[in-house]
Image (cartoon, rainbow, N blue to C red):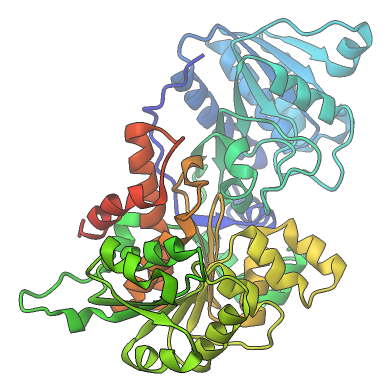
Length: 530
């Protein structure tokens, strides 16, 4: 069944941990006097409105309910749908003895409605499958995932995922970790997720992007004073069930990137501007046979608005690079001393595209990081940095997950490394803590981490899974830094523009076959939209 993609999709920028959302819920109930049942009804109304709008022709629906407040939302949703003369079936998966007072009241309301309620266990014992329906509502677990997911919840989730029905998850897909976006066992694959009070971090990175489908937000009328109270508390005291990484690295605010506000901060150029006002980027890399990477990064820096771009590469690539892009200044490097003049003339360095890990590569890397220039380190620059004790606050590291693993596992214990690999937010923070500067952890839901904030990219698509995309991103960020953007500002705008440009390209011609250089015209257009 097709989903109506014209539904409003505006989301707040703030992202929260599960502990923070639970605290917001508690503050609303205990300090603002909003009853738990009132919040459940508001959540249910938001879900019903979304479901009716998304699947207007649906006549049969099934709601899977667990044991917590998420189930309470589901019970009220069932009753409201029944009042609209929709044929509704409620499948009881959890234990009724574990319901809160509010969820128990919601259950009583559901029982009094004109709908069918069946026990999942009884149905399973009979060995018969449930009849087909148009829409399934997942109200099993919400943010209540703790450790290993027990039966019958795993079986119920698999049953949901095996169905051909449209799927709407209540608050968060059941089985998905709302902090990390990781699936421990199995998680609901939702077409739409209606999320309440505060958006959960895990829905916007790792598996969360795939499992959540389209995300709709309902604030449930929580007053702003509740969020202010949470912010005040976060400055002095971490919540008791925050991740160890949050406690050790600080509970910094986390937000989605918003292109309109980011591009508005890029200054309009004066009519009497000249190239020296917009910086000189030096791109360093391109070991023998890998000149394409450094060429793409350099062209991306030019297309992002840098005034001058130079390239230091292996001598075997210099002439071909000039033929490809004559606007570049290219010099073949044989010994470290060949870099001196280039480094003295540049104000930003992009180090690593196609650099390799040969003796020549190590010589180049060692020479460049001796200079105290702002720099973007990517690709093999990161692999050569791994295990180093060097820490700088004026560089920006852009690892993909494999490079991030290398950066962390050189010095971390095996247990610590394994834990970090399951949490992209903690991984970005750990890299920043160890090496300094700003970290851009690439991948689905790219995370940008500085000492003061976290940002997550909501743009991008699977078409970006192709060689060279990281080289383009490094060049874009370097070009923006050359134009006097701070490292964090350049990272946020660069990541957003890079991903949006890919979205524009794939909207026209599809995801398969997208080349990294295909996005450069749209990068340029997006950076001139102010």
